[in-house]
Image (cartoon, rainbow, N blue to C red; front, side, top):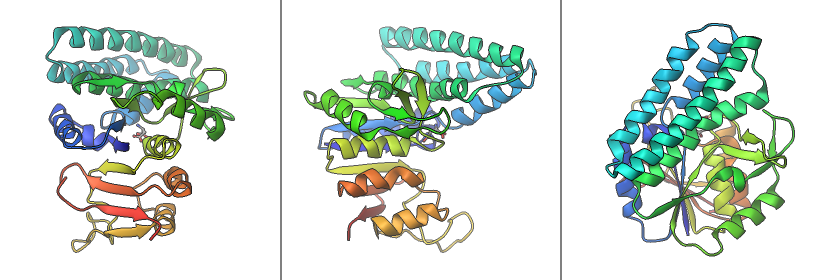
Length: 291
Ligand code: ASP
């Protein structure tokens, strides 16, 4: 069993998602695929929430634009009319849900952390649905039924005991290609929660650790951990191997490659992490393990 995680930049256009499909097709082990929201969507949701809670009615047009982007992704990727109808119905339901929450923000001139979690979760809810319909023979599971959090909204932590049990039970009897939305979880009351910005990496690590996966692959838009930021330093090159503690230290001090809490669960289970580039799948990437 292998867990692959694709971030927003790997899912920025329908064309890129076709590339992701090829990467998945090339795998020999059964795979769980964790996906982020499409590129820029979480930022847009935050911006729209801000507009609404400042009483700016432009939020409606911005929301329509964001929903249209998702409709267009669905149209571009789903050739089967049943799949397209399925996606369109879900997008419609989610769009109405969002419309109501944003109207609440607009009327009250404020947003709550709890409601914001519900808003931000929408990006991954829609992207995972469209991608699972697009991938052949795959099933979709809702991470909110697998990952349980405790604590206050906006500041919640994973309840690993409950989460590990739920994940093991969900995958006990299936080897089917499964798509999971990253970033989203729920508390013990069943309310939607999130794992922090960039949290889809963490989702993938939690799942990989619970299932003792052979490897966790994190697919990004860079060749792995590099000696410097390649946008600033021309001669930056990829570091092929890092220990968990080196990678954790680098993340902690600002290397933007992996969301900081990600490595803890996989380190505990000694699961190797391979950071790869969707735009350069042949590249070696960075392998993080106990060596
Ligand atoms: N979509 C979320 C974010 O942009 C989570 C993620 O992409 O990892 O922060």
